[in-house]
Image 1 (cartoon, rainbow, N blue to C red):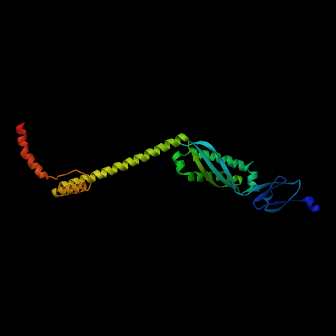
Image 2 (cartoon, rainbow, N blue to C red):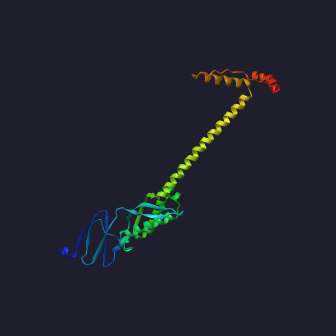
Image 3 (cartoon, rainbow, N blue to C red):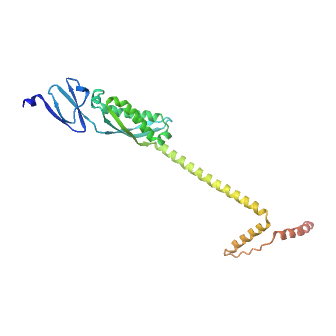
Length: 246
């Protein structure tokens, strides 16, 4: 009984620490726990600090990028307390201050990047935000473990214009491929024509191949191949008489 009049007993769990103020000061600047902690009535005051990692969803807010595009960014911050004494003695509310700093830091980082840079380098933004937050909150006894960019939402009008632009680019690429194919085909045909023009036998062979293909089709067309030389000889004989009659 006399022992209980001079001491109060508190049990601190493994993931918590107790910061004891004795006559307004923290003995040895060290927290108590885990385990059993003895307190002096009317002399000691204490605060319990949780050491577990906490997550905070940064509220979605509209931000302006460097190229004057309004975007909404959703992010999450994971942090924990590494110095219980500093988290209470160095700042009024370490958790609230960390959350507010996360919002302003994210807004400032978005303002230094264009929309294209943001969409292409989310991880880079998260790493830089984590570094800035961890540097600022270290004196408060807070360690920022990571920052995650969950979503970047664009205005509806901008999404439509980007989709139309992407469709136009795809159509342009398709037309270019078709034009390139036609150019290659025409060059190949020209080369073949030049090759055939150098040999009359090749021309005749090509004519016979064409006739073979035509005859394979079920039709009633009759084609009589006439040598070109014969046509030229006939034209030479007929042309003088034709002009004389006129």
